[in-house]
View 1 (cartoon, rainbow, N blue to C red):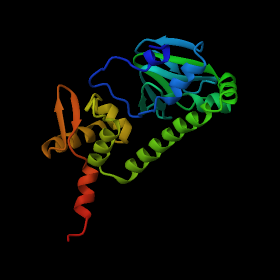
View 2 (tube, rainbow, N blue to C red):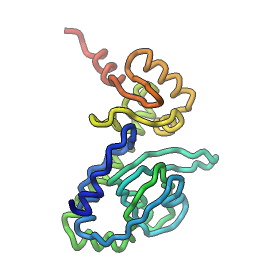
View 3 (spheres, one colour):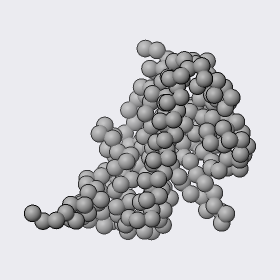
Length: 232
């Protein structure tokens, strides 16, 4: 097994979830064409980078989970996303030279590629196949953020929760481990609102909960769409 294959086939960890599922193609390509890239390990609780820093470092997650947060002027920390293997982090500030607008903290022990922005650009210039993979990864981040914004501004808490769970559920890992506060931050609601909505979803049979793990049974959005269809 090659080094890149080994990095992309971690042991199955039940209940581990990311809110952004990233294709592994970019990571696999980077490990294949540049196996000497700097790899660093970070323990749970450490920061990859902090908001307002100025840095030209780009991070690509090899394994583990990283939480992306923003600190509001009132001091409240907002969880934007939880990303895992294959995710690209910190590229915005690294490429435009401005201060970072978010922080990245390690939620579980992780390993990342640390690449200087200039070196990343050289890799994309030298290896033409890398550029579309990077664009695809960035486009996915934008799409997910736009989807989440639409959910926050238009949908009920129950719909927002089930849509979030549907985005991060995979057939081989249907159980989701997120606290009510994390879910609240991700859907733009209060923890109390999430707790009440979860109780309703469990009563309605839309979500199952066992030992702190949530499993989506059916989507509230799908139910709403079915309910709006004209009768034959």
